[in-house]
Length: 78
Image (cartoon, rainbow, N blue to C red; front, side):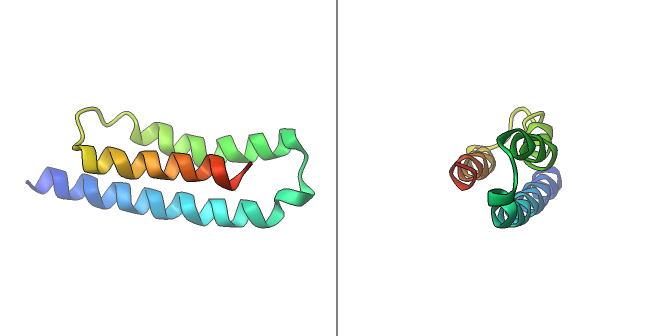
């Protein structure tokens, strides 16, 4: 039980961090080239999400949180 709770907290903090970065990237998006935007996106967003994807066997609730963040990142930056 304790193991699941600590993972849940970690995923929640990761999602919060990704949304924070997305919000800030969106503010400066119009000043960046497409290549720069892709670089920033991968540096701040993809790296955090791919780290969480290594957590095999998570409950569907946790996986859905990560999927939601990933989908939001695509929508924010298009």
